[in-house]
Image (cartoon, rainbow, N blue to C red; front, side, top):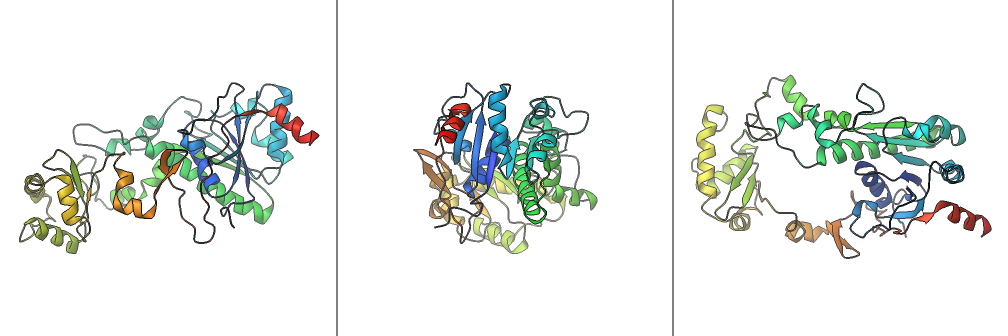
Length: 360
């Protein structure tokens, strides 16, 4: 039985926060053997540390200790890939930079994920998701007119960071198989966010996007692409961009004939009509009435409600690992599907583990 399309691939992960562990989790979900290197004082991983699932081994290592450092380098020497998310220069100071490790393992794919990237005047400056998305224009485009709104730490950390790191590493691994030569993958969250905004940049280039929030296609400007409050104070989302779906929604809620929607001068009145109508029923009443048809209407669910949504439940989108509800492995593979592995929780001192391996 297959255990994932990346079976046979070994990745050494240097423990960090956010994008690095999540990227390593995705690779583990796809079958890679992920070995996590922790600090000497690392504690056992809790079942709620979802992003640490699937690790084949966890080693505690003092990277300033020559013996531990030598053991770590021996692991990397036989690995296919490495993931680290420290500030630029940190791994080099430890003697674990790509110039050193690639001499010992020429086919090594060296994955680096940071907010600012490995070059540029801010490369060594502290920052978080909010900072990385702020300078790209993404944060300034999200929210109501009076202020930008932080869209969780999804765009910078995980979409702009983890996803581009995984994509880049997979591409580099394919190249290494073909050429025998590895390379460094520099995944900067700010770069990733800019790439994610490609569709918005197209609208900017076409003169179809303005800098005023709630004035554009996907920022809440369209009356028929936004959220509306319902009778119970909860919300539904609508998005019938195409004419047939717009007509169908309007007819279903009693807006007949469907109001003209192409002229922005009509948007305030249309928005007011939607606001009035959707407050006549509860969120779940609207979902029961219209979600299953081609109306482009969905309930805005809370995090705890999402696993119970009939569609997500039917697909098994959420799973239970050690009593903790979490996302199942994605994407899905027709032949190489693999169940998620809970992973090793207790970090083992690397010197002890290597000595036992040598003795065995």
